[in-house]
Image (tube, rainbow, N blue to C red; front, side, top):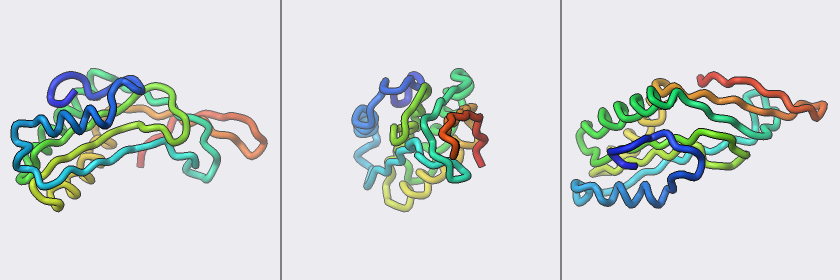
Length: 150
């Protein structure tokens, strides 16, 4: 976890508490004035308002890990950013379950909030992650389709 190892994990293989602990163990953590956390979860409503039953997340793991590492490294080089970590889960998920943890430690809240937002936008654009949504139609049938991020 942290600076070493994968950033793509099977569901349940990393906890938010472990991630926060690793942030606090950063040798530069004494410079931090705050930590911001974004937790992406499975939404129970699809793009067109249909009921979501579950979600499947797949990744081109080698390239996704590389992309997330590069994003985190880039963000850590920003002025006022102490640490930035992105950890995404793959597997099958029910509505409400955690999909991704993005954590930023910064010297000031402005560093934290702007970098947190940038981290989310970058990973959605750059990491090869694939989302298959299973929905329940008005007739009660289950349909699935691959979702492209906007």
